[in-house]
Amino acid sequence: MKISGVICSQKQIDECQTIQLSVDDSQQQPPDYSQLGEVWGLAFSSVLFLWLFSHGIGYILKMVKNG
Image: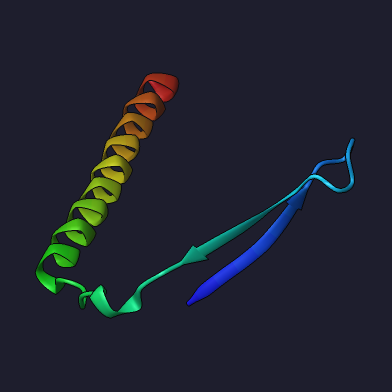
């Protein structure tokens, strides 16, 4: 895939540069599902830990407030 464009100066109209970007898709490898599973597991357990931690803090604050 090739993307090309032109950038021109605002002060001098005839001063322009051409830019080309090419991306090679042939070297893209399929995702490693074991590594994706590890990342998802880490993210899920982090969210679960933070929820349990905040739930515990909320329970302690509730006991202090009502006690």
